[in-house]
Length: 165
Image 1 (cartoon, rainbow, N blue to C red):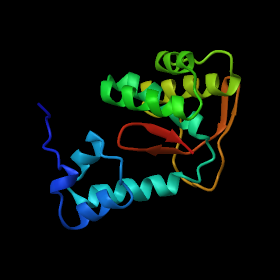
Image 2: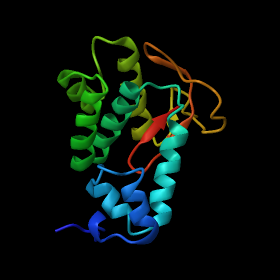
Image 3: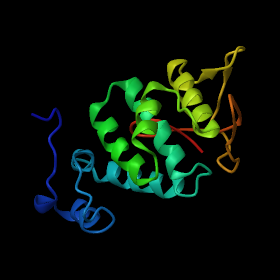
């Protein structure tokens, strides 16, 4: 039994129906059905995804972050969804499992990103020995990830995870 009533696309009306028939056509996942209780939430989700489409991280890298944080949050739904999405973005089965453990091996950039995302989640945004705060301030900057070091990033909080853009 879901904790939140969901809106089935076939019974949706008004703006929610337009969104299900338009941008979310064929994507009738439970998360969207739950968001459909509020057209504003669906619009926010779509606008956020539109904005993040131009982010400097690849789809693979975004899914690494989603898997790390989904695991840390204990969200089975998120893990199932982002494992499938991650594989579609080019992650191997092993990489999805490693990301859930917070350390991807064999790819220095994905490894650094997974460790950073895990530390960022665990320390609630405070990372590094001096516990410097990572701020979301200028989405025009690009994330530069090198093994063990994140030189510059912005943090965007989504419905389920932190994204580095």
